[in-house]
Amino acid sequence: MKLEYLIAAAVLLSFASCAKDGGSAKNEDEKRYFDAWISQNHPDAVRTKLGAYILSQTEGTGVPAGDSAFARIDYSSFKLNGDLVSTTKEKMARQCNIYSSSEYYGPYLAYRGTKLESMGAGLEEAVAGMKVGGKMTVVIPGWLSEAKRYDSEQKYLKNCSGTDYIYELELVDVFNDADKWEKDSLRRYMAANHPGAVEDADYPGFFYVQSRPGAAGKEFPSDTTFYINYTGRLLNGKVFDTTIADTAKVWGLYSSSSTYKQKKVTWPSSGQNFTNIQLADNDIIKGFAYAISKMHPGEAGDCYFVSGYGYSYSGSGKTIPSCSPLSFYIETTEAP
Image (cartoon, rainbow, N blue to C red; front, side, top):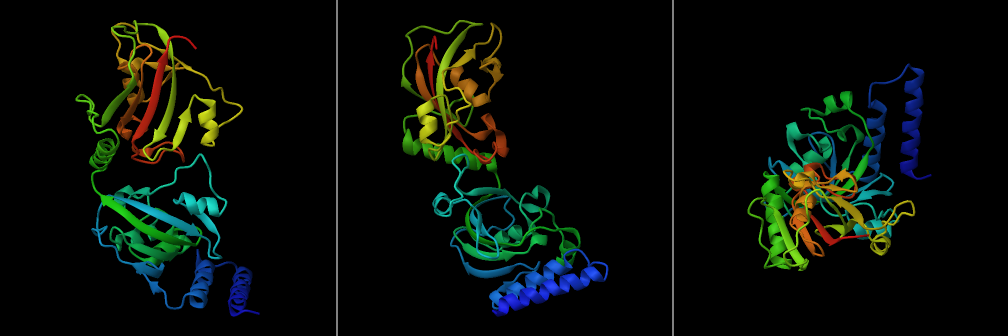
């Protein structure tokens, strides 16, 4: 029998012994098993202050993470047996048969620090010791998985619990001003892909690029309805919503329970503004409504806008990540 299995068996026996004695302190058994696994599999790993273990690290050439408020990270997480649990890398997800067409793949945006607390303590500690462009493989015990902040390993052992994971990390970027970072990202994208596009003077972080002019001199009257087709994308090109069945099928979004057809737009009454525009009798995000308000009958174009005019910094589900600029292709028609 392999030594690692003998160690695991011994740990399991100790679990039973503790149970017979009336139980053990929180995480006592888990820590015993974790320490035995590290000792057997990675005896040369470097222990961090809080009790995670660094297996390998390549120092980046960019700025240190330091106390920056936000970090963008590419990562893959694995069980201790090597099974992939999650990843930000589409190719790896496909290769390991965990890919989902409804999920975003790309760097994860983490809110850092003692106040934001959106990163687990073990990941926070690991990232704090990295520079942009750096890579690290680190084993994080379950009690360091919660987004809480204590100053010692013992306090985590006493108050937190979770699952042990191995993380492969790459620090892509760090910054303090999310709004500035997002607008700068969109401006770089527009300069590269639509160099003639002009940023809206009233709504910084909004662009509109017309691809088909509407009827000359014709406006939508107040308190009327018309119809549109649209396709929503992230800046990496991934489609997250569409009224077109074939597009939904190509991107793995098609659902037989959904209806793919032009959507009715309710134009606001006289005296109201674009925030009162409704799509299929529902309120819509500000950037999408603003784009429609600039269009004319028969017109088509693409709008681009930062998350402040979309789903805010929180994103939307697993499809639209935090601080993500969006793009919508919209074409207007008078009848379905």
